[in-house]
Length: 157
Image (cartoon, rainbow, N blue to C red):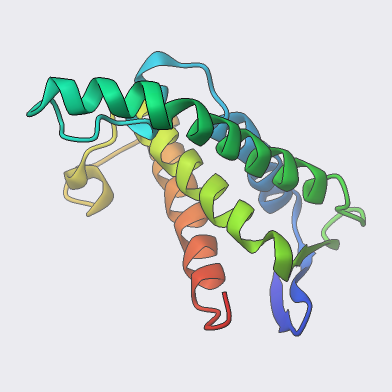
């Protein structure tokens, strides 16, 4: 895979089918209805230290935050529908104006994957041997994190 940064955004070229599948799965993870994942994405403001503040946060900020996150997932989904190519030569362009939506969606997906698979800090630091679905989830989290870092590295965002 080759990633080019342009004045208009990013161009991902020569993507293989695995990369395309990882990208296409991004909206599903970010918008999951899983209770543990949603609790992680929309975590409490004070971590339970101030129940009143947590309640106000859920009631006052929660609905707007959920709408914003849904809008961002919709933008990413739309961008993903523009993937072109075949075999091992797929291309995706992410417009600069969609960067914030991608950043939020990548972050949501990483949080959701962690919650869905019970991923811990030890898992992410490689201190525990993993296999199967858990190992694949860690790889997805790392891949999404790499993309997140790439998008955040733009100084003009």
